[in-house]
Image (cartoon, rainbow, N blue to C red; front, side, top):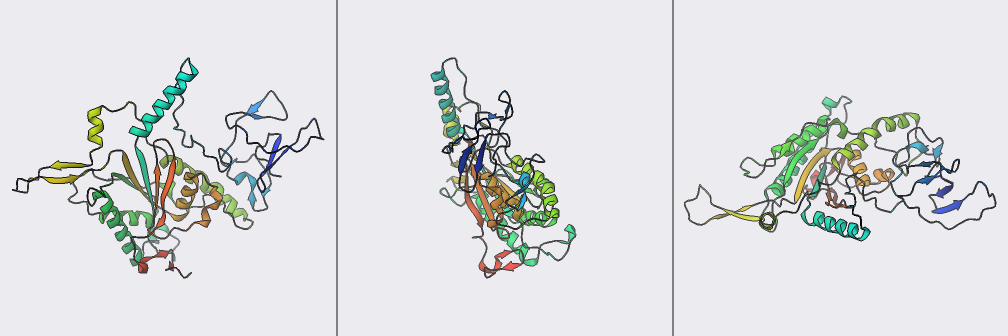
Length: 375
């Protein structure tokens, strides 16, 4: 039986979700039906009823011995904040605390009012993860692992798609406010990001310019955690997981979070201005008296693009949706594919695209050195 909490008198078998109540003082204790514990309650310490410990989540480091089903060290198994499939509302540590009041009902009313304001006036954060283009895998040195000619074409096509999103097409398919393009510190990702940016065709774009962030080594490729299904891991894989997991987890926490909570509701005039997606402006080049419509991005939606790697993207997918990270290798993201998330101001997360390659023709679809789909 797998103990979910080391110091808990309850043991949870993850295979059949059965809980056995084992009372140390009563060996004849009967089996009780499983009842999920309140995550806000401290965990009882069977060795000392006067002590409590906080619930643990993530990887536990060196605190637990043994293998998880004979596959990998139990200490390297990811523990969620709450039991699957429950949703942890404060997953990014930015969940607003309840509004305090002497009267309990008044506190609940003010908190609900505040939450409605957040839903109405808050900003939705859009994150588009892009895997780098196909690259030369025959070299070990990173500086030589550059894009193939096909990989450069893939990146160019991806840049054109993003450029269309930034500029917008018409009133119905308006522009997207892309604030920044981020990238890992590996050569293939940096080359992909450069080509994407150059092909966005923003030379005559009169909207807000897109920032190019400095390369971030936290986004480099690696082994984020173990994967299931899989066989018993070698000691070198255990060491590599210990090395890579903290970095990739830090990258997730750095970039995946809701936008800042609005401090106060905007005035009626400001609200009206923010809801206006089409603004009319006069063009200096035209001698005609008619005005020309200018497409304006919705300020309640902010986008950022992150060019990185397949393992990182798949791990982010599982973490963002609060799914077991050990499932990451069950997913497949092609070169220059788009994986797209929205993070609402309330903290809910949705995936709108997973490994989307609709912008690439069939002859440009690759997964590393695999071409097409017959592999």
